[in-house]
Image (cartoon, rainbow, N blue to C red; front, side):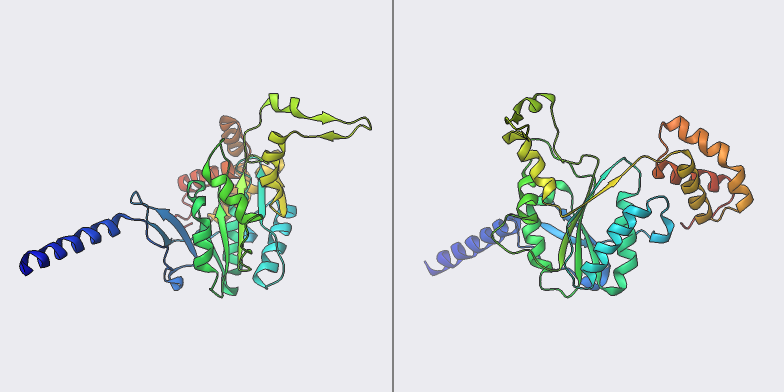
Length: 294
């Protein structure tokens, strides 16, 4: 009888171990010395983990051209944050390929030696933001939670989680965490023409948005700093192209000779963005013996 009971206990323990293995586990702190940047990844089992980025992009603030106004705002806010001064969560919006995410990566490289760290979180995993904040709250470093290309469709769970973390949760925000998000949408949610009908007008001429519009604006308003990026004109595009060609080790004479090709490259893609300039520089330098280590 005792043998059967012991066998039953062993089987029950094995079963509990298997159940525990598939249940979501509390987020654990990684080896913070492994990198200056991490990605939050969630496995199919539901387990989340902070994985170190082994090869952090080496872009510097000096590599970025034609966005001086935006750079000054982001750099100032980031420096305040690193120095322990009050700083804002940031929403970077505007034209695609104009340097929004590159600027955040460059700030990481600029201030990593002063304790700045970055955690990249996909919008689908924003529901786990409270767990991430809890893990880093006790660390001496300053953490930017980076959400790239952020936008939401109706009903996505990450929307309310982000809204609560930014401003609205009963828990106070950790002083060593800020959220930097990039988006092509200023209000982060799709907007429809019919929603304009919900605006109301008072007798003195004031305009008041309806509840649906207010809800869509409310998330963006919780970011303390908005920084807008705009499409580049031809000369700005060529200046950025020249910067990237120089970065790849192309000579000044070759850079001047490359201008017509750079314009054709942009015309074929229907865009004069910084991303297009970078892609042209990679192609041109590859064909003309530039550095492959960039």
